[in-house]
Image (cartoon, rainbow, N blue to C red):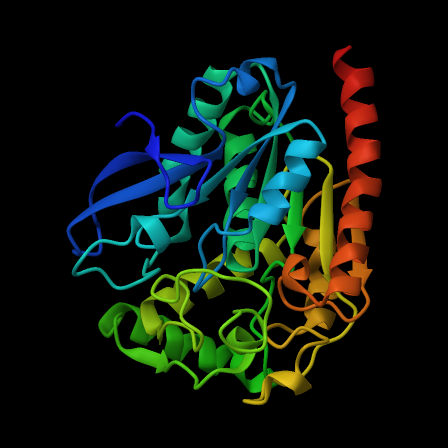
Length: 336
């Protein structure tokens, strides 16, 4: 584990976790933990709360507006670029590729250890899209390994449009299709199921197109990364596990759009709505996350509710703040 170094984002720092050889045969794996503020500024030692953010597919941490918001609420802010993603991608590796979502557990737990060593803060875990699925499964396993008590420092979960089921026609979720994915995921795991698009959702985000945000298009290309059989089979196994019911062991907030829109090339047609996932599926499976779940639909929000048009983004932050008010009060009562 290396020390902290300046990040690509001004005012942020990063450290790298060495994870050893890739079980999928793509060299050595590394993950990157990013923090807002320098390691010697003393802010973490004084913080009573921290947040650990995990991105989704074709994504990495860049949303400093969200980090600033958590900081203003008294949270020490951390984000993890998972192995093969964003800052953690290495030459010769297939971006975001894994055949088992449980392999992220090691880097998540290393990140949690770093956060809790820096301060006695209670940790709020945050996951977007595929990252929401990853962290929900991880917390369920973590709780199980801790004799149903969970990790003593993890006290809440926020999910931003979590990927709880496979979107599209029902045939894609049928038993025959699942059998095909299972076979292809084992025999031709790097074969491509879906190639990158010519734009769509990504063009509503980046400032070079029709969006408001600036980020590295190498790490988050406008048309997305290719989807492989091995990776989508891992996602489907994770979703099947979630559908049987998880217990993340902590109160959780699920933010999502109030509607889905069909992804098309014209960004003006998909600025208001989730162009990636079916929000009805999020609503259907939200109860499988665990107890004490709050679901907040955001009018006209995009897939990442915190990258929505300004009025929807303000509404998303308002819902987040309402829940954080409750969360912070509850934590204060529980821990003095």
